[in-house]
Each structure stands twice: as C-alpha cells, then as structure tokens.
Image (cartoon, rainbow, N blue to C red; front, side):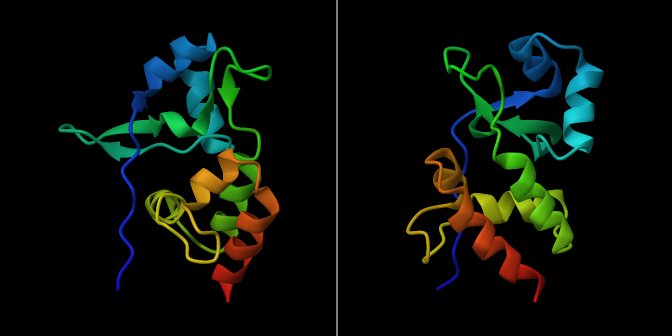
Length: 123
C-alpha cells in the first residue's frame, strides 16, 4: 500500500507569514533559504505557500516563529538530496515507525526519532 501525504489544514502565503511574524517578506524568504521554513506550490495559482504546521502559534511561549526543530530536519532531508516538494511530502506522509506523520512527531517534540528516520533516507 502506498502512503499518501496528509494535506495540511491551513496554509499561509509568504506575505501572510511575514505579517504573522512581524517581519518583512524578504525576511521570510531568507528563512526559507536557510531551511528554517519550507514553502511549496499550493492552491489554484500554485503560489509558494507555508503550511501553518511549520509555525509556532502567536500565544506559544517561543512564538510567533518557525517551529524550532524544523530547520535541522529540513537540513537532514536536503543532505539526503530531497528537494522542497519531496521534503514536504515526506513530512506529511504517515510513517509506520513513528505511528504518525513526521510533522506530527516534530510538533510532539519527537525530534530525534524523526531525524533518525530521515538520516536513513540518504542510503
């Protein structure tokens, strides 16, 4: 059986992320370049968009901002030669070993388990 990615419930455009974080659009694009965030084509215009799951809520003690453990995970995936869309699909596809999507596991602070699995992708 082929696993199918779970569609994130909410998405933000780059300008919306900038507004949420109180920064400029170019700062958000910098976060994307630095693997602190990931943006993939989404919606009817296939505009680069950021899943809301990648962001901490405004009322979070460390928020608003990118999910802190996302950057290292995106870097591991990039090292495994995953492009942005492949990384997105991997993060939102249920993983049997985790018992949930890697993204859900990251949000549940199971960073080491997610990265351990991601490191095996390069082989």
